[in-house]
Image 1 (tube, one colour):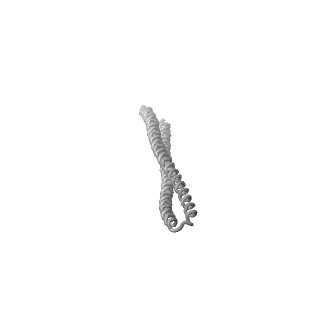
Image 2 (cartoon, one colour; image 1 turned 135 degrees about the horizontal axis):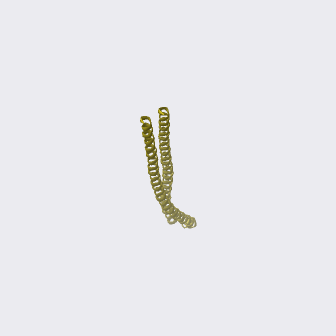
Image 3 (cartoon, rainbow, N blue to C red; image 1 turned 90 degrees about the vertical axis):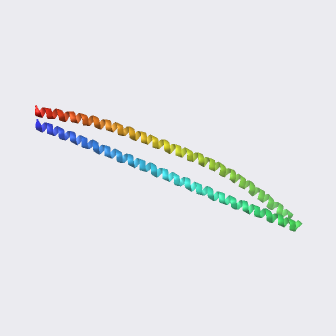
Length: 171
């Protein structure tokens, strides 16, 4: 009987050790998943930063084009004052400038739409990340509660079995 009780106690201890190893493995897996989520968030942030750099470059190009347009307008007016024969050339240059202004305005509109889309996308990404993190946290808490309840139930049963085995040995 004593050997049987010791064997049963050893088996129960092995089960407890196995459950503790499982808990540690689940914790490591959860940690790795959270690390992966953080890495993905950083990757997305880098993409957003790259896009913002692109938008800044476009803004700088726009400023350069506007300065160039102003320079060309001034130059065209001076050429017009100098000679009548250059009127045709200046008219074409002015038409080109107007076309450039329309292109710039079109580009400004595109930039504005891109910025609005970017802001909306960023808000959606932030909201999505927040929701995902909340869901992960809730899932983690639920899993931990479930495991604690399971382990407590197993420990209670093992303690009962040990107590019964001790009573058998004593009896």
